[in-house]
Amino acid sequence: MTETGARATTSAPLKLNLLDATLLVMGGILGVGVFFNPGQVAALLPHPTAFMAVWLVGGLIALCGAFTFAELGATFPRAGGWFVYLRECHGPLVAFLFAWVVLFVVSTAAMAIMADFCLGMLEELVPFVGAAESPGRAAWSIALLGAVTALGLGGAKLSATFQNVCMALKIGACLVLVATGCLLFSPDAAAPLPTPSGASVSAPELSSNFVLALLPVLFSLGGWQMLGYAAGEVADARRVLPRATILGVGAVTLLTLLLNLDYMRVVGLEHMATHPMFAADVARRSLGPAGETALRLAMAISALGVLTVTVIASPWVYVAMAREGLFFRRFARLQHRTGAPVEALCLQALLAFAYVFVGDTDALVNSVVFVEWIFHGLAAAGLLFLFRRRADLARPYASPAFPLFPLVYLLAACMVVVGNLLQNDARLSWIGLAVVGSGWGAYALWTRRTRPRSPQ
Image 1 (cartoon, one colour):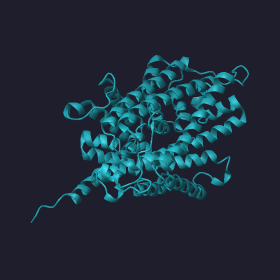
Image 2 (image 1 turned 135 degrees about the horizontal axis):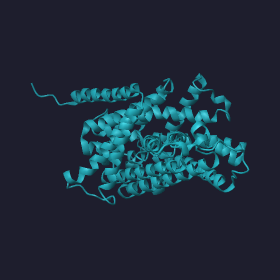
Image 3 (image 1 turned 30 degrees about the vertical axis):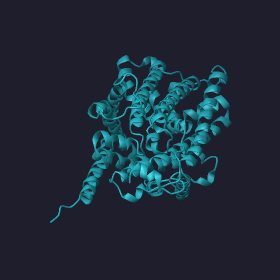
Image 4 (image 1 turned 90 degrees about the horizontal axis):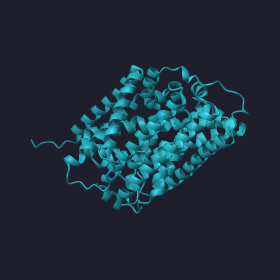
């Protein structure tokens, strides 16, 4: 069934407007990493100028990615987003491998992680959620995943409205943290913290660490592609997708820079590098004990928001697979009243439930980070040659200074892939390759199963 036909069989209109779409982009990026990853960066770059420079460079790379995906999204404003771009640029095998990684690891495992993290932040406030890895925590994680999935069954607009509320609370919490840290906090009045030792780091070491520090920075600033997944739910997608993507990435980049300035001012780089919960320390020093409690609640809301974005957006990748004949046709079905992809949502939830009971889900997700960045690079490379190979395509949005942005993003993706391979435990790299290899095998079996048989 074509996208137009699938939409015509439902009574649900295209409902997501520019505000919904922009907040969805921001919600996909602004997760919990902004409260932890700056510590990894500070450990590598304990010099204030270098520390802020790497976040600025990471933000510029993210904007290059935003312009790249904005042009692809405007050209192919169909459900599935990234999957569709890879299918159009590189063929069905590459698109299938991408969707395979998303379905069986990236989205579903991340959902389990976000649910557990959300409950972990509430553990001191709401003790009955249970300790980590306890049966009670697992039960609550499944309940939370089920509740957010049920919200998704109500349709894109309902889920997006809930996500908008989460996003507004996240932005508010971050702005309060920045305002109190920069305007009210007095370093002279607070208990002293160790002085950063960045001056003792040699220039060559700072240069090599700069590249390594870009990895957690780009991880913190990733996730804008989620809007493209749900492009079929966006009104006037050719116009809204580029605007929302660029606005969302730009806004989160600015907010992240402000947060990092606040962290440096309140606790300093050395404290950030040695204390994983440095953000809670920032809140406590700026607002007192109530500030730390409020930040934990904000972290829980942030995780819930990212979980909601994933639940809203990712099923449309599986819908696109089914529409292309690369997955079971039933997963292309949409609920008549709400337009929700019910079967795709339920499949995703079941896999996420399973990951609740997997011991080291974080390691599995980390093992496919470099694989996901290969697909980032392939999307950028595809855009570089797309209009030369297919002159008939309409180009409703052309990124400025083309081909500069996709070229920079392609180079950045290659750097991230190589950096992850060099930095990761070799076992994780092999696990990531095994996930891709299993997808290759599944594709071979699927195409053999669906290939028309020649008459005898």
